Image (cartoon, rainbow, N blue to C red):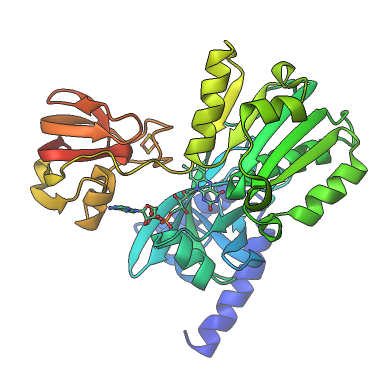
Length: 372
Ligand SMILES: Cc1cc2nc3c(=O)[nH]c(=O)nc-3n(C[C@H](O)[C@H](O)[C@H](O)COP(=O)(O)OP(=O)(O)OC[C@H]3O[C@@H](n4cnc5c(N)ncnc54)[C@H](O)[C@@H]3O)c2cc1C
Ligand code: FES
């Protein structure tokens, strides 16, 4: 960009920050730019000016630990400031020329104004996007966004007694809930919250200072920190000793699948139906053989192993299929299976021709044709 262009861009950015009603402004722009679309001009000078897709700008990157960062994202036109604490945000980041999408729980509390989103990302071993975000994303990066979604949030009215069970980076959606309860405590009473949080090492505790401060300012909040390298993983019997009234507490839990499976077993065994879980990953080792996947009318094919999902496979060869959470939660990715068999990574269930499948959690068992 030349000096005069960047000067113009600065002026337009400043003007954009003051534009109060995006739809009206876009209508005016559409008249001015006809027959081309306003986006053809506007996003050139100010990337957050797009009515075609939701965008955001990373305005700050805060390092929480060696392998964890928090991104604060200023949403562009059309992005809703309204969401339920605990929901996740879809984020697309340009990695080696390709938009790569993942879901991240919102750690921010919703505000009444346009507000900003924050998400906290931990680099996963050999993970594509998480390592890119933790290693290279800087303030000023433009990201694509999918509107906040998900059922993992507190009901209204908030129950008077609550339990949170989290481990490691699974604290993120609960952090959004705690920040929101704290903010709302100006008008509403902070509920009676017991939070059991496990970390491998004490130094790994995300948001530790903030949680300790919350214990001091909100008498309703109690945190039990379990350091598993010293005390081992907490089991149901120990949980009962630690939180004697936990049978009276609806529970929101997020962490490794093994922890969530154990909790779910305990709730099932005690006939309780008030456990709400958020899972970040699926077990990819489902014993599927993989195979050649053909994407219907596109005529494109890809050779996949038994751990790469049909959705990821399509993206490898430039077949864009609809998706949302990418974790089997939202059903956005459902398509028909024309031929062959796929396995659902969440539960090992096989699906055959004529069935509808969720591409984000399905892997090939032999050659497969997808109806798109
Ligand atoms: C609702 C929701 C909320 C979430 N919130 C957060 C959050 O707040 N913070 C956070 O850090 N994460 C969160 N996640 C997880 C996040 O969406 C990503 O899954 C995570 O960052 C890893 O993405 P990645 O691109 O780095 O890894 P990917 O490249 O997607 O890989 C994930 C893991 O699978 C392995 N893998 C990938 N492909 C294969 C294969 N073919 N064979 C074998 N192994 C394979 C990788 O080695 C890696 O360990 C959330 C997920 C969901 C669904
Ligand atoms: S993308 Fe949400 S269920 Fe598949």
